[in-house]
Amino acid sequence: MTSAVAARPADDPTTTTTWWRRHWAETTVVLAVLVVLAATSNAYGYHRDELYFLACGKRLAWGYPDQPPLTPLLAVLGDAISPGSLWALRLPATLMATASVVFVILIAAEMGATRRARVIAALTVATSAAVLMAGHLLMTNTTDFFFAALLSWLLARYVRTRAPRLLLILGVVLGVGLLNKTLLGLLALALVIGVLIAGPRTAVRSRYFVAGALAATLIAAPNFAWQLAHGLPQLAMAESIQDRSVQGGRLGVIPFQLVLVSPLLVPIWVAGLVRLLRPNSFRLFGVAYVALAAELLVLGGNGFYLAGAYPALLAAGAIATDRWLTTVVRRRVLAGVFAGSAALVGASGLPLVPAAALADVPLVRQLDFGGTREQFGWPELTATVAGVYDGLPEEERARAVIVAGNYGQAAALERYGPAYGLPAVYSGNNAYASWGRPPEEADVVIVLGAPRDGRPLEWTRSACRSLTMVGRTGNAAGIWNSEAERPVWLCRGPDRSWEQLWPTITRLA
Image 1 (cartoon, rainbow, N blue to C red):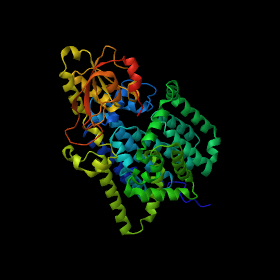
Image 2: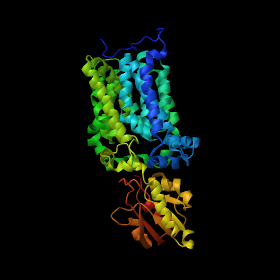
Image 3: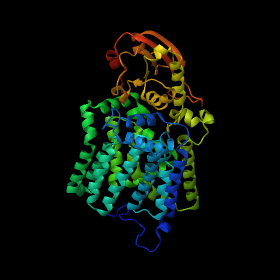
Image 4: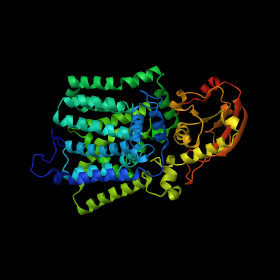
């Protein structure tokens, strides 16, 4: 049977042509991605998740209720380079997003891509949301896509070379990746299904496959043990995400794929999927995409969770697109697609618009897939709380604490609060709930997290002897985000102990 995808790279690496002459175009794209992400990583402010990762990283553990430990570790390592610098914090994301472009190029090379097809692969992933949006911030999604691309390349190389040691390396990479996000296990399962259905089935009978599986299990075991010891909170977190119907929940998984990579790049990855579902040496990746989509539809999740299956699709799509470029008109169309995708994704995901004008950008105001809105308001929120605290009588300040409604508020106050001399901040949200509750002598409480409509939180209505709204949060850019126009309440004299109150305050969300 003739393979629809070549089994070896088209370019002979043994030629006397210099490496740069053979790879200058792809390398230029990779360097451009690195420069763009590095140049824009110091704009705007911390995303709520980045603040939270810093807080988690200061309390390093093998697990947290909502994530494994790798991204918090990367956050504190980046911050250690230059404390308080956004550029340093986001350096791991910049490097991993850039490396993801390299891995997609390498996957295309393993599939037999020509020089032009490799450039198309580079431009496709470089102008995608997986790199320009996710790569701009230090997020678990950024790290997850990096590991997915690395796994896909190693597996593609195994398909071509049949080098058994690659199966062991795959296991090691999977184990480390599971310390970032357990979701990677669903991709690994989908890839195994792809191998069982489309081959090479000899892989799963290899002792190196067993060794790789054992390595992955041993590396990820500390996090699994932490989850078991704490009652598997990530399962409860997953249920919370399903209840919120993020990106439309189960029903939205498939439609969301039209915007996940980039609306303009849909024809390329669809061509890659079609190519990979036909009989060929790399058909397992097409089967794995379908299997992962089926897993998400059955188990629940959101549309972002399919991102890990795209590196192989983008690589195969680049090969299909290369063969489609038979006329000048088609080449111009493709150039327009890449330019349009870079503009669309860049405008909505990168900090290219001045902060003062950002509130009027429709992509940010209405969609904001890049999380731009959540990078504003944290210093202002802290200043608002500081104003309330400073207005308290001195004897009350000595007994005052802050209880934040969510991890973003708590982490922001932890980051900016010391400069104002603020008291300790507590929260019942996610990992903060297990990091301690207020001391029993704390009977003056600055409370955040109430609805915008002016209603206080339930626990404050029932427990506070005196409850007064003392301010509202906002941001200088005038951007409407999760923390804009949130009331700040002052609670005096809770009538119950914090030991009794804390279970009513804690929540996973």
